[in-house]
Length: 178
Length: 393
Image 1: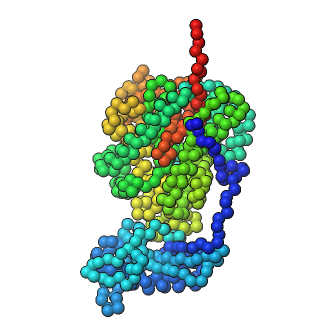
Image 2 (image 1 turned 45 degrees about the horizontal axis):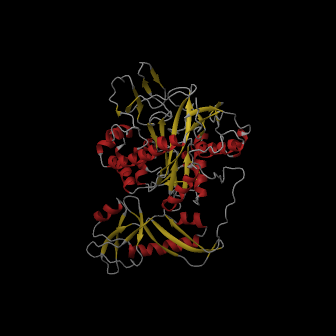
Image 3 (image 1 turned 45 degrees about the vertical axis):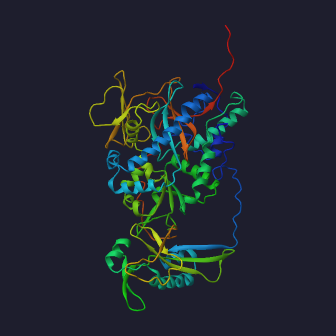
C-alpha cells in the first residue's frame, strides 16, 4: 500500500482525538531570565527571583571566565560586554558581564517548593548562551586560562520586545506558496 | 497515466468544512476539483516519480555541500553577503529540515522532468496529505473507484514520523508562522502544527507579522517569550531584506526550513544541477541567464519566482507565453522548454513530496495554461492497476 493507513487530525477536525493528560505532579521548573522583571513575569515570585539574581551575580564574580585584558575579553564576548573585576587577593582581571541567570525550582502540583538553585549565564559575541561548567566555582585566572564554560541550549524565557512587524511586508498581498 | 472524469462526492463541501479546509474555493473559483482524477499505474508511480524524486533529492543535498564551499556559487544564487556564513554554518551543523516539493512535467511517456524545487515554502500540503487521502477512501467505499485502487500518499505518516525524529533537536518554544491574512498559508501551517502535536511536540501558531524583536536582538512571541524555533511559511529571501532580517544570523533563532534551504528553493540550483549531472534523464538543460534575447525552445524564470509568476516561454513554434508578477527585477535562469502535456485541455503539474528525506506522495495541480499559476486547481489521483485482460482478435 502506497498510502497512509490512517490520516488523523488532532485540532483541525471537528472530532478531536483525546490528549492524554499531562503528568502534573513533581516537575522541575527551569528558566533562563535576562532580568528580575522577566523572571517575575514568568514565575510570579518576586522574592525568589530577587534572591536568585543576587546569588547568580555573586557567583558570576567567582565563575565568570577571566581575561588578562579587556581586548581579549571583548574578542570573545563582544564590545562593551566586559568589565573589570578583582579577586580576593585584589588581583585585577576582566570578565564578561552577566547577561542572564538560571532559576530552577521543584514544582509540586503546580506550586513551587521551598528552595531553588540559580547561577549566572553569559552571552558570547555570537549570541550563544553559556554558563560555567559544574564545579567551576572559584576558577582561578592563570595566565589566560579560561574557566570551563558549557553552552546553553535554552533560550531565555522572556525578553522585552521593542518592536514588531519587521517581517511579513513582502508577502502580505499574496500567498507565498510555491 | 490517464485523466478520468468521475462523480464528485455529494457531501465533499461539508467534509471540507469539518476538517478546516477553508480554501477549497478561492475568490469564487474552485481550487479543489474532484470532478476528475488522474490514474497512474504502480510502475509509473514507483519507477517514474518515486525513485527519481529520491535520487534528485540526494543530488540536491549533495549540491548544497558544494555551494556553501563556493563564494562563486553563492554569488550566482544572489545570496546576500551578510547571510552566507550563517547559511553555510546551518548546513555544516546539518540543521534539521522537514519537507519540500519537486515539480515535475510528466505524462506517462518518457522520464519526468524537474521544473523546480519548492524547498523553502511549499504549499498544497493539506490537500495532498489529508483531503486527497479522504477522497480516495470515500470513493473506494462508494465503489466509484476500481477495487484495490491505491494512492501514492504516505505524506501524513511521514510528517508525523519526521517531526518525531527531529523533536529533540527543536528548540522551544516552537512556533508555526505564516502571513496572517493568507487563508491558504494559515491552512498549511495549521496542518503542520497538527502533525507536530501528534508527534508529541508542544507548539503554537503565530502570525509572521507578530514576531517581535528584543533590545538585544532576539525574536519574541506575543508573550515576550524568546522564540526557540520558528517554522516559517515565508520565503527566506524575503526575510533577508525585511526590517528584522539583519538580526537573523545572530539572534540564536532556529529556523525550519533551515537557512540552507535558501540554496535549494532558488532556481539557480537548476543550472548547477545540470552542470554537475549533464544529461540526467530527469533534468532539463539549464543555465544562468545573461539577459540577452531568449531563443526558441527556452524558458526564463527569476531565481525567486513563486506561483509561476514572471515566467517567459519561447516555444519551439515561435509563440511566446508570459506571466505577470512581482518578481520583475533580479537575476534569472533559463531552462530548456519542455511544455506540459494536455489532458482534455488541462495541463497537470506533478508535485512530488519529500518529507525528511523520503519521497512519500504526490499532488497534482492542473491549469488551463502551460504555466501553472495560483489559478490552478488541485485534482486527486489514484493508483489503478492496468487491465490485465488480453484481447484476442
